[in-house]
Length: 288
Image (tube, rainbow, N blue to C red; front, side, top):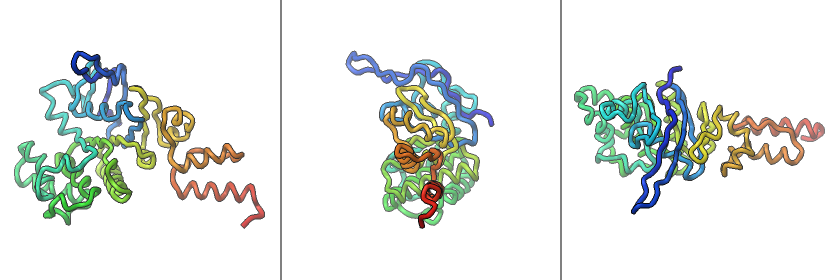
């Protein structure tokens, strides 16, 4: 697969206030995201997750190095609109992205700003709402929807602009478990069925476990990078970074300290339950 995002020797510092020195976030960050992939980015508070995400569609610009999107330099002012057409952003609070009083009008907002024809906007809005499972709510008022439904509307607004990549910056942080599940199921479907590249910034390990690739940031650097099974099996490393593995992995890791010899790559609840059942059955063959 070709690269859709390339971060090359990125340096970035937030400017200081009242002659105080700035805060350096990145000094030499390097990362590549392949087109059509689903990448989860993890890390503790202050590690640079959101700062990195904002570089992907020119909300922030590098102090050094460069970020390339679809072969375009994000710092090139003449390519700003093109960069943002290719990379859409979804943030924590969906209320901050909803601008209209009717769902379909909100979804149409982005395409209208791109100067797209009315007929094409109608097609895109209907298609976007259908893709996120919200077509039945086209005439509803967004403020009456649940948090998960609002976030799906925000995603539909990005889809309507037909980007190649969607970057979600902790989109489930303000949602209940049902809302979280709705949003993650939606982005997984978009990645699987439409081939849209997904970059998910999250602090929920169970969400990251659904990605194809997990990148862990620490103090502005990549501390781990691999498949979910490869990354989450490194329990000691995660603990040293102030993070935890998914609950299934943590359980197996704790049992191994009690004398078991369990693999640390069972991320799903069902496969973990089967592993534990087989382990107990082997150690206690006479039990029921």
